Image 1 (cartoon, rainbow, N blue to C red):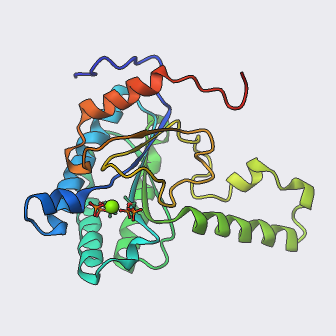
Image 2 (image 1 turned 120 degrees about the horizontal axis):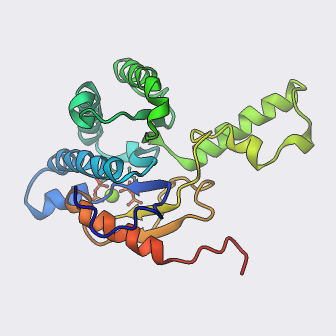
Image 3 (image 1 turned 135 degrees about the vertical axis):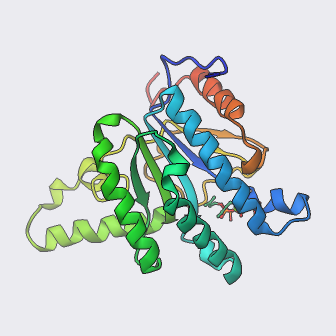
Length: 242
Ligand code: IPE
Ligand code: IPE
Ligand code: MG
């Protein structure tokens, strides 16, 4: 395996990626936007394998935001059909790689067929808890929505007398986010030239290192990911200290 000179002893524990630029990739080729989403899904496989193979422990991919419902219905339908197909073919997606899979986001508005498939994959993957790789797929994820969900749950605990006001701290609150139990992302990558967070992991990215690339997601290669990690490895993370 080519690791492209990444220092394997100093890897980010958790990488988050905003998979952006599929539509523009297709447009540049005179293709429908959905063709870009298909190509983006192929790239997801390539990048996930690379992360697993070099020893990244947690990978989180942003696939559909709570704001993406604003898109034309046929694009939304195509995206959800694609998610279903890829999940159905999960073995082909992951090969023999053993990953715990978690879906981050509000599953309620999704079709029952898709929700059942997601639950089945989450459940089956629990046998890989010792495998050391967690693959998070953010579908219908919005960080503000997630923070409000956590706030409601914590308020409920207080209302029921299960906790006092003083018990509300970062740890307790984090346990009510979709990412409970996961480390915060060390490195967040956004291809496609946009430099914004688009409602992704707002709470979790308090001290995340950001890396932007102008390359569109379907073209974002393992070598480019390695370059992002190498850049990350040069950064000095101070967490407010000196
Ligand atoms: C990202 O690519 C995929 C999703 C948001 C589902 P886009 O579809 O946003 O691609 P651009 O930004 O229009 O190029
Ligand atoms: C962010 O991309 C969401 C995903 C990649 C899933 P968008 O294309 O939706 O973000 P904006 O609209 O450019 O901020
Ligand atoms: Mg976009």
